[in-house]
Length: 70
Image (cartoon, rainbow, N blue to C red; front, side, top):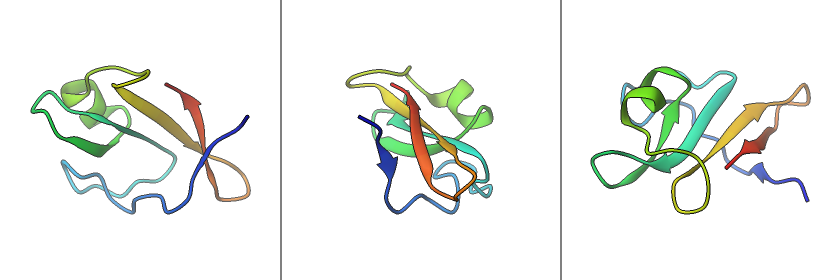
């Protein structure tokens, strides 16, 4: 079953850069979850991918964001 992110974020919750092609919805090293740009903020603040950690989404040609990992 494919999963898409219904209302994808416009900006990274950490650095506020625009989300363009990929992002992670996941737990941060500070504790709370957030939408992090890939790979910059996720590499620095993400706790991993998978159940209880986070999911990676990639923009598709039709404009939707498809879950590709986690």
